[in-house]
Amino acid sequence: MSSVDISPRDKEVIRVLQDDFPLCEQPFKFLAAQIDMSEEEFIERVKKLSEQKKIRKMGAVLQHRNAGFTANALCAWYVPPERLDEIADKMSKHPAVSHCYDRNTAPNWNYNLYTMIHAKSRAECEQIINALAADCRLDQFQILYTTREWKKTSMRYFVDNQGESRDQ
Amino acid sequence: MTELSTFDRALLNLLQSSIPICSHPFAAMADQLGTDEQTVLNRLRELKSAGCLRRIGTFFDSNRLGYRGVLVALSVEPDAVESVATIINQIPGITHNYEREGNFNLWFTLLSPSSECEQDILDGIAALDGVNDMIRLRSNKKYKVNVQFKL
Image (cartoon, rainbow over all chains, first blue to last red; front, side, top):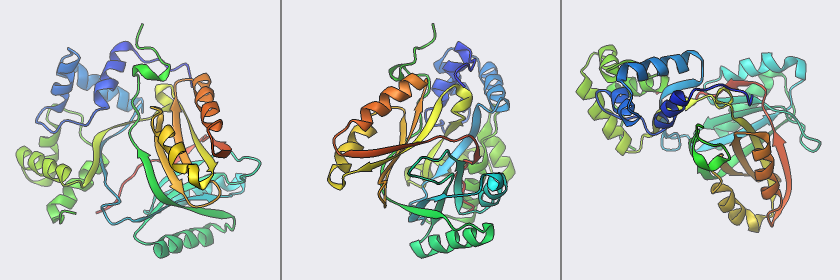
């Protein structure tokens, strides 16, 4: 994964895109002007980055704690490896599941699938998890309720202080 | 929280999926909603300042940008959680850091431009006072990463 080729111009586009999206008539023109690029070129590069799936999405993330989702849990599951894809696909389809990743296990931690579950109460959260467990025939899992959010930020890519130099 | 109208719900559902990549993206969204560009922009500014939106922005695939990610679980002495969390929060590549119930009570995600960089940061954290155990959980496959709520 370390040999990803991104041109210096694309890195500049990424650097300005990672700020809040401007709420104005021509947001790409506004961003392009910051790096002395034409709006047309900027839009072409953004389209290309999207096609290459380097950009996952441009859009909004709602403030879900404010949206009434107060019981949020990371649920760690043990899934038989040969059933991982099948079960992960099933869990991903559940509307209360916002994230679903596989992970390696550790000697003292035998869980290999992780789902973030968002619910309006702990009772509802447990109901969802028990239903998923029954549906997928799983009996080894841990519900890890979020008790405090210490940090939640967006990554800053291609900036100076991460042991990565800017473009040579 | 601001009471959401039917129009707001339609607008936010649309905005959650994707902003069109064109010269006037909010005009394109307005077309779909049967309204005009200014109405969309004004309402979005209001909803943003009312705190309904965590963020309007661009979300990148960190692996495809050359970064490696890891989820780390720490078992921390209860009275050291605050001091450890405070130090962790200052590290730029650490984007999420949550306290959770259980023996492993502090969970964070780290994105680094290289494995050497990741190793240095994690060695430093493992050596902090109050940190008893650390597990590193790496992902091969992200099945779902979109935080979307149908309104």
